[in-house]
Length: 126
View (cartoon, rainbow, N blue to C red):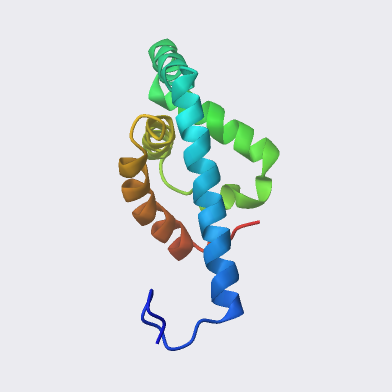
């Protein structure tokens, strides 16, 4: 077995997959660190708070779903919940996204169940 990982066989596919994973993670972490150094995280948070102060959550949800209807009409049928619930979910998703730069660990902890739910909904990457 491999002294480092304990597997009996290490395939080329596994090597490539792990190299890809490390490349993606490294790039994202580097961007996050750079963004924090440039105050981007605080600018994103401040502008999001300003947007929330200027419009109700229902209005923000309506704006998002109106744009979604125009940009990706093929997925709008997936959003069948009542308008207020959709608005709430949109705000929660935005809070998750905005919070990424502030606390990447929490972001990934909260992202996992969200991804699993969307897989169950039948969402596919494109």
